[in-house]
Amino acid sequence: MMTELTVSICLVLFMFFVFIHVFRKLFVQYTFMNKYKTYLELLKYYSEESFQVIYKDQIVGFSINGQTIQGDELETAKRNYTKLCFELMGPNNEAALIKFFGKRENLITNMLIYFQKKCDDDGIMKLLNEQELVKGENSNG
Image (cartoon, rainbow, N blue to C red):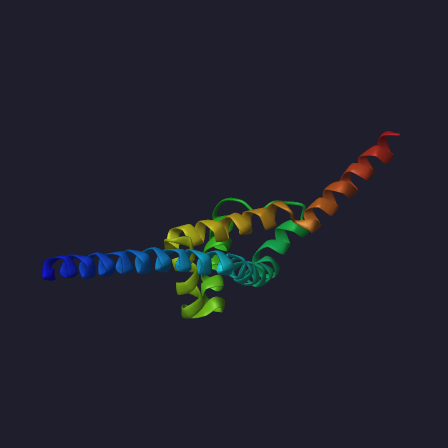
């Protein structure tokens, strides 16, 4: 009788711990998924703010001249952009985003993808190219 009671108690405790472990995992996953949008909005905010500063300081001159930033200038702008992002977000947000992305390198990769996309979507450069096309069509026809 005592052995059966001990086994039953051990079995109930084991089931309880398994349940707690599974519930905890699901809860963490649920919480993480709910914060997904918040993390991405946070990253987008700091990325946009940093890009605006770097764009005005280092990229707009190339755009006005109808050039794309390349080579060493591009690498310097990327480094400055990444550094500024981390400075603006502060250590707590940086730690949260690193935890979200898994590694600092993954976070930096996502930041640089955003930076490159914004450079490629340069409005001044597109406007100048359109004006050049219009000038070319007017001179031809």
